Figure 1 (cartoon, rainbow, N blue to C red):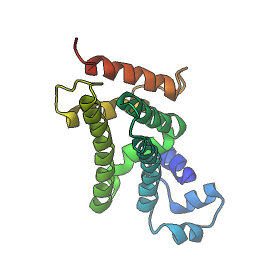
Figure 2: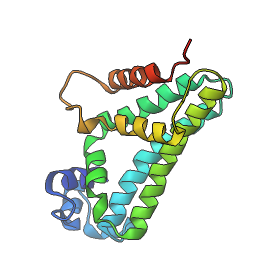
Figure 3: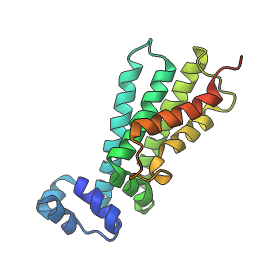
Figure 4: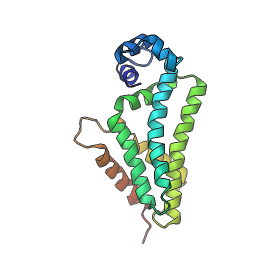
Length: 183
């Protein structure tokens, strides 16, 4: 998948053959077909892997009932920024090439995006109940805005001196200035 993501990023999804992926990965084309029927499936698996990494960490945070919502929000933002920092080619490929997938696979990926948005919305609602946040707008809309801010590769060049945690801190502070309870 790493070889495919790099090639898809460099040459485009349609500009890369499975044979090129096999050569870059140091395996046979038949070995790829043993795991994936199509390039589309490789692209979907790249996204599944990234999404599951973040969502699994978030589920671990939810298991701790007394964890402050602020900590859960900062953790999720940090995890999303880490994906941006550690897997920029994977993320670019997924976000830019997903439109080339068949409708059923696009639906699956849309469900994944809804899961991210739901996780953030749930944190906002938990924080509101606990008195940590004040969310005056639709929590789903606020969650979508936060999620959009997390795709830093669009607006933050990777060669800059900031790292994922620095970006997570900036986004978290920005979000919280609008979520703090008014006194």
